[in-house]
Length: 175
Image (spheres, rainbow, N blue to C red):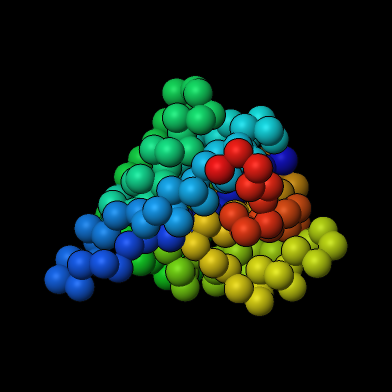
């Protein structure tokens, strides 16, 4: 079985209109969302074998905050081709993942990430797919499981959407 985590970067700041989109940093709300997401991932003992991450500032900062909380050395690849990539480009990147990788996290942007999640989800737990289709906000995290041995075999509707969470859904007691 393969497990895929699709994470949309946390909320970014728009306070400098002259700043290039690629260079936008996390907003305070995004930093708070990262704390919630990191806690959620740690509680679930999520340990991806590989993280594929857009090199944009906001995606890098999202991963840095999550990776610190997980407390392990996880191979991370920052790939320019993931910046604002569409679902086809994202799927091509996933299909090229090494065969010894069983659990993978992709951190990117919408609309490509949302389109990819919908394309890969053949079935889902509870109302996860309805919520995902309703809105894939910043910090949205989808967990998909595939009854496959190789990433190269990913195809539309081949995955089971095991969960879809947003920072707003996660416990905020210790923010």
